[in-house]
Each structure stands twice: as C-alpha cells, then as structure tokens.
Amino acid sequence: MTLTLFAVGLSSLAWLHYLWLIPQERVPERPLLHSALQLIALLGSIVGFLLGGHHGWVSLGCGIPVVWMGGLWFWLLTQARLPDGEITVHVGSPLRPFTTVDADGVCWSTDSLQHQRVLLKFFRGHW
Amino acid sequence: MEAVFERYGVRVVAISSDTPESAAHHRGRDGLSIPLLSDPQLRVITDYGLLHRKGIAFKTFFVFGVPLGYPAGFREMAIPTSILVDEEGMIRWIDQAEDYRLRGDEARIIAALEGCFG
Image (cartoon, rainbow over all chains, first blue to last red; front, top):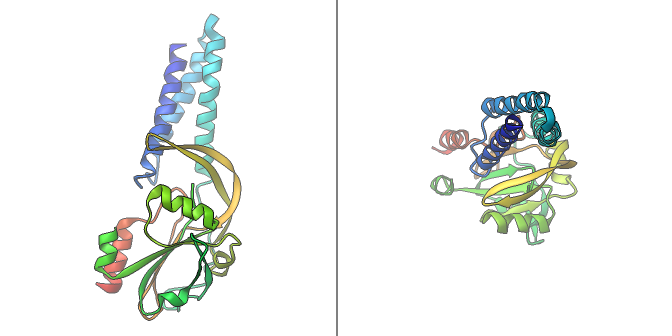
C-alpha cells in the first residue's frame, strides 16, 4: 500500500512540476525526466497492487489514478506532433492582407500595419 | 521580450481561433498588452495554410499559479506560427512549431530580429 501511495505522489509531482513549467515557457522539448517518473509510478502502482495483500483494494483505489495520469501523459505526448502545414506565404513574399476583429469586437485590418515592422503570431488560442 | 521588440521597433500582433470574448478573457487573465485578433471561423488561418484540424482543447483552471486541467476533445485551431514582416510589408522570417507543447523560442526570435533588423 505504501508503494502505491508513493506512486500516486510521484505521478502527481511529475504532473504538477510539468504544469508549473508551462506558464514560465520552460517546457522541456524532450520531457524524459517526467516520462521516466510516470513510468516508475506506473510500475510502482502495479507492484504495490500485486503485493497489496489484504490492503489490495486500497492499492487498487490508488493505482487507478496513477494509471489514468500516466496513460494521459503518454497519450498527450503522442498527440504533440503538429501536422506539416501548407503555409501559403514564404520569406520574400508580401504579407497576405486580411480583415478580422480584435478582442473588443472592433474591426481590424492589415492596412493598419503599413510602414511598420510586425511580428504576426498565429497561436492555438486560450487554454 | 517587450524591451527587445521596442529596441527593434517591432509591433507584435497575435491571432487565434478564439472568439472576441475568449480573447478578451485571455487578455485580462494574462495581462497581455498586444492586440489579440479573433478568427473563430478560421478564415484567415485557413487562408494562410495554418489550419490544424485535430488540436486538443483543454479545460484549464489555475491553482496557486499552476495551470490544472484536462483534455476536452479536439477542435480546429492554428498551427503556432510566427511571421516577421518589415516596414515594406515583406515577410522576412517564418517560424513554425513542430510540437504543440512548445512556444516560440525566445532565442530564435531574437536571432531573427538581429538578422533582419540588426
């Protein structure tokens, strides 16, 4: 049971540390340490359950969230790779003009960028 | 990076598939001062060839500054891309993310600014 509780703590710690890195924009390109911790937690929960004895139901109850957190971790990593885009502009081409609205609902146009240096960032949106 | 952009006289504009309401919420939550443009119909994103059809949508909340949340399905969104444009409206540099977890690298942006306008 102790082992399973340790596994829950380890998996949670790995997740919390990774999530803590996100707002700081320090997400590791290859999260090997976090993946290793999730694997250790998964193995620990399995061994803990097998050795649980008469506390097996507690180990099972703790093991399920470890499996869920670990499974979610590795599944998200498989989804990380972005598709190859078919970007329609290239270096040396003019910026494609467009109109849209801003966060205040006011019309906005690339005409407002004339004679300015601009970094136009397409991003995935709020999270 | 605000000081860096000021040094090179670069204005930053961001666009996503967020609705204006979501963009306004994002702006307030994160204290953003740059213009956030909305493209909920994905018209501009598609025109630029930056559509990611199977982006993971997250439901997020913050606890003591740590973002907690869970995946809440898939939705269409932009492939994170940075486009640097000069004062004549010509594109000088493009940077695309290969991994949705990684944001634009500061060092790469600074190097691009130095290379284009240094």
